[in-house]
Image (cartoon, rainbow, N blue to C red; front, side, top):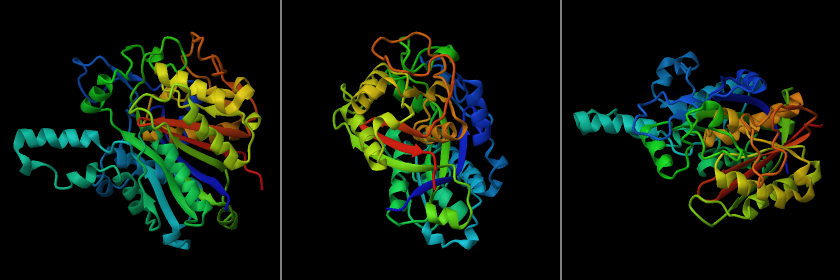
Length: 411
């Protein structure tokens, strides 16, 4: 098996565009949640979202190219540009068929569908944008990234709801391990803070009705009552180790293991005992040859819903045994809301930065302990401590469970 390392990262998030700005906000404990800007929420119980307010695609992408992408694809390409620049990879020196893309979107462009559907109702079917179909399809984020950079190898769009970003990175990891590619741009993106998207999740009673941004996305807090919709993208340059070393690339960390399972239980509710999610964590640790007591940090899925936080806690206890009470845990969603496919990717960026910087951020807003969620969720202040091994969990509707283990790089 070939070893796989991280040589570049890019991010578009509600608390910062670029990894540097995102991490600065993480260090500040900044919450990127506020009143929904995309539409009038008068008839909605859910009033808050985590939107990327200052995103102007033309500031990052050539205007002509940007016009041929919808918002979610623009975010993916923007993050990929940063990741590529960060990696220093010279495409002209590479075999383009050895360069791949694995960028997933959970829902594609709900906003694009709404926009063109409204136009069709108001002006007739002949007036919708001629590129509507390719603009809104979920695979167009991956395709747009590949076209922008000229990557001609494997190009896939993994779709596993909220586990999409983590599964995408895991599948890219596997592809490089098995020699299918030298480099893969991997991650996730979603932008679905739309009338229909919010209404659909609201109908499930999955969204918080809090109107206080500081008390809306509060994972593991006994006051939690739903998640906050978010948007954004996280993209990695994953690279085969010898390829990275040969070109003198800076290596941020090594991807050590990947685990994926399915609850096979219910369309929305996870298994109550957390057994399938626990197995994903165990598989990732076994893949990396790591024992539970060696893991320093878990970036939890931590959505701020009653069942997710409780059942993920049970899963961690099953996977880690006594070590569950010793490992540091947090949820980045306390600051960025639920970015769907983008969430797992940005949360793994957080893991890499925690390894590089020796800092584990707090679960912001966690004030009141839930007696059933009794692990160390980094309440109050962040922790400055060495982080050698971290895992990131993502759990999606339909029972999809994905875990990626990342570790400090050692030659």
